[in-house]
Each structure stands twice: as structure tokens, then as C-alpha cells.
Image 1: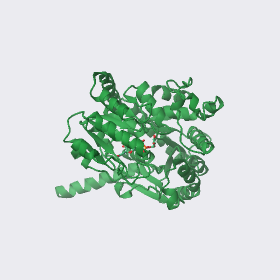
Image 2: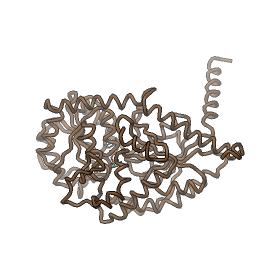
Image 3: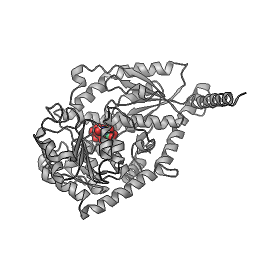
Image 4: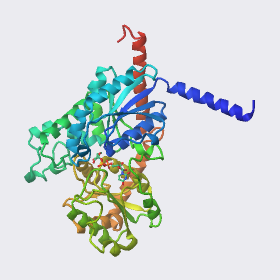
Length: 482
Ligand code: UDX
């Protein structure tokens, strides 16, 4: 046998062994089709795949992931029933309410079909986004356990969970006259830090939150894109009070060097950053949903310009309400700043935050952005817009103390001052030092012996135990034991 043939045959053997190892360990994942949810679910899918599980993704047509980017997964689209107008709405609550009604039956049909396909590997469990609150009951009816992925922080989940109590005590709905009052139940939060959204359908929002919390707690376990050292207190409360295991195994994006891409990224960002001095650039991005009105956008532009620091700014098309892109920029603005600013529609954020030129992140405090910034040791200027972002911002500035929060809306002087404080002045040095210390913890927790590393091992054993139960039940092995 030639050396080449030998190599070929041993490769086939090892592939055969891998397939055999994989056999019988299929997971079905059901991501919510919003980038801030889809990204971490796909990252989790990659983590679980690397641990030997086969991955099947059930997804809506709306914001469907590009299956070509994930040839190692199997994709099953389901109908979401959204009209063109509904799919392009900026009203996220309305969108979620539609999706959580429209997708129930298509999801049930798809899952039932997958489970009845005997030529496929048996499915060990469903991993569903917490917002898909109906999915546990559907999976239960098909005798499949559900593990929930909650893509926001553990701390904000506890606040969402306390909504009934906070309503009873009159903290919710939020009254303008009480904004500064401290929340005794959740220090250091104030009433104004409660997760709120701008809607006239408040009751529907509360019901969605309650369904999300109750169904997560009724599932077989919750996975968090977080880590013990970061959210010790909230996670300890959950370990103690919840009757299900919880698995903080983040930060997800640090498991693999390749990042998930759900939009076309402008790689000119990195080429431009390469020309800038270390720690000199302010990176500005408000995630995938939040928008600004024109006045705030212009204040932001002048704040950045006046700070005299170079900046990389993600301005998504439609980010400024009522505008296509960044037309409202004052005429002459770009000329004034010369080459000091670079504006893109979407950036490779993981690479940007890891770039040595980036010295601060002006953010809307979405949980993914917060965790990504922490993981790279980049101090934050927080401008939370809605929902959990307000809790995250308060934690950044008051608990972890790795950034500052702008409290009085978007004013150019405040933006300029915050940038200078974080990047130039001596008073920002302590914040910068804490950022580096937290970054080290974020990296250590993934290494052998670290908390996320160990919790991932626990999660794998836990999921594998479902499969054992499933096999034993179908073969009668556990008769009389269960
Ligand atoms: C939403 C909510 O706003 C957030 O509060 C919640 O925790 C999750 O869902 P989003 O607003 O999109 O998410 O913010 P964020 O959680 O920060 O997620 C944005 C993601 O898009 C991040 O992973 C970020 O890396 C990525 N991104 C953003 C890019 O890759 N490029 C960009 O230019 C901007």
C-alpha cells in the first residue's frame, strides 16, 4: 500500500470513527431571528458541534442565517407568516408578538417531522432562545427536553423575573417623577435603569417578559453567555433559587477565532485601524436594532469631532430615523475632521474590539457588545437605549466600573468629556486598569480549570444524560427504575 493510500485509508477510518462518535448526539437549535440573539446561538452551535454533537437549526425565513457559512450544520426553514411590512417594522415588540404566535404550528410540524425521521440520529434535546416561550411545551408534547439559551445577562434576567413584584410596589410602569429613586431590591439600580421599552402595548410587553421568564425556569436548564467571575451574585441567586441547572459558559465568541457574520462586514475598518496609533480610536456602534433621531446623531458627531480622537463609527442604513444613511451630517463635517473619522455600515466588531488601536467603545450597551468589550479590555461609554441595555450600562459603570454612563442624553460636551476622560486623562487610568483585569478573567474562565470550561463539560454530560435516558427508555433498560 502506498503512503498516500495509507494516509487516505487512515483518514477515512478516523472520519468513520468521528461519525460513529457523533452518531446519536444530535441537537436541534431554534434561534430567535434578531442579530443579537442569532449570533450567540450560532456561536453556541459551533461550541456544541466542536464537542461532538450534530447540529440541526430550525429557523424562520425572516433573517435566515446563511447556510453556506455553516456547511457542518443542517438547516430547516419554517414559515414565519410575516408580510413584507411586518418584517421591516422598527417596532420590535410588535415583531416579537407576531413571531411568537405565527411560528408555533410551523415549529411543531418541523420538530415532529425531525423526530419521526428514523434515518437521522436521534435528537438529545432542543436548545431554544428564551423568547420562544412556546417551544418548551411543544417539545414536551413530543417528549423532548428543552434547554433554554438566554442571550442577555443573568443580572437583567433577575430584574425581568421581578417584574410582578416591581409592578405590585408601583415601580412599574416607570413614572417620570421617580426616575432617580434607588431600587432597594436590586442595588445599584435606580428606577430609571429598569428594562423599559417605548410602547403603547405595555401589558403585552409584561406578558411576553413573564412568559419568557416562566418558561425558561420551567425548562431543563438555562445556558448563559456570561461567566461566573462577571456575574457571581446573580448566578449564585439562580443556583440557589432555580430548580434547574444553569450553565454560564461564555464568552461564546472567544471559543473560536472565526466570528459569525450575519451582515456584510466592511473590512476597510481593519485597514483603517492599522493606520492609527495604539489605544487612540473610539469605536462607536449601537448594535443591530437601536436608532437615533437626527438631533442626537448630530450631537454625537460633534462630540466625536471635538474630542480630537480618531473614531470608527458604524452607521447602519436606517440608523438615523427618517434617513437613508448619514446624510444629516452637517455639510463640511467630514472635511473638518479630515482623515480622523471612518464611517462604515457594519464592522467586523470582534476584530475591531481586539485591535490594538481601539481605546474606547461608545456603545448602546447591548449584552453581546458589552461582553465583547469586556473580553478585549476596552473601556465603554454607555448610551443605553432600551430594555436590558439600561441594566447592562449601570453594571458597566457602577458594578464592574469599566466605563462611564452618559446620564443626560446625547450632548456633544458630555461625549467629548467622556472620551477624554477614558482615553487621555489620568482619572481614567483606574477604569483602564480594571478593564485589563476583567479581560484576563474573561480569558481565564475558558481555559482548563476555568469556570466556563468546567461548566461546558457539565453541560455536555447533562445533555448526554438525556440521550442515555432516551435510549434506555426506548430499549426498556430503565423499566422499573424511572
Ligand atoms: C439585542 C439587544 O439590543 C440587546 O440588548 C440584547 O442583549 C440582545 O439583543 P443588539 O441591539 O443587536 O441586540 O446589540 P448587541 O447585543 O450588542 O448585539 C450586536 C451584535 O452585532 C454584536 O455581537 C456585535 O459584535 C455585532 N455587530 C454590531 C457587528 O458584528 N458589527 C457591527 O457593526 C455592529
